[in-house]
Length: 205
Image (cartoon, rainbow, N blue to C red; front, side, top):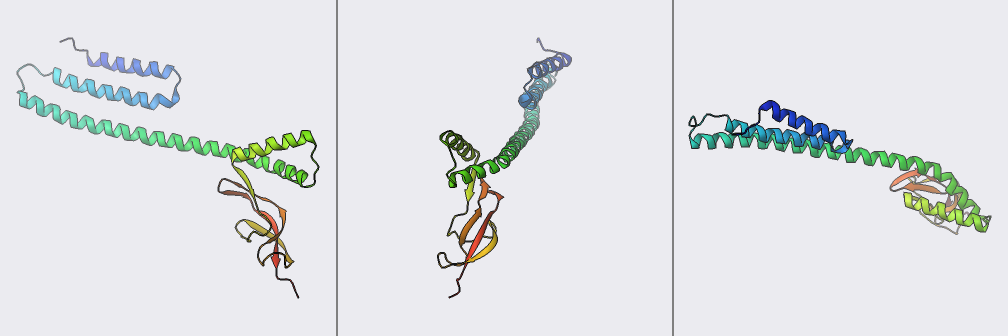
């Protein structure tokens, strides 16, 4: 019937896997292994049918045997698929975490520079050339997800603000920000640095 021996099929599966791994695609290696395993299961099913001597089993027995083998191999393939899906999720999660760690490191180094640029802008110490550089820095900060917070009149939030002093004033409602000493920064929803502020309190009459 032109059937291959078990050793030939095993060698073929191993050669296919080796060829795929030689390409250096680490991401596809687990998928290639499972593909080879799936093909081996199919070959096993073919051999199980082909190795039975003619006339030894009835048609009904052959059908029952094939149905049982199909159910077993379907379970195996479903398990392999579930393992691959879990593997893919882990890889995607680890890649996202690694990327975020890299962004966090860059942004933390960028915060003092953004502070210096903001201070220079407030004191009108920027030349035309420096303004262009400052604009690029601001653009990079926004692209990375860095945002500043704390403005005069904002309600004081101990989760976001660090109160350094109180200022008796009628210009702002009590327990709001009367002076921003140092801006706070967020990266997405994560607070990198709380804002340092002065809090308004009721002025003595």
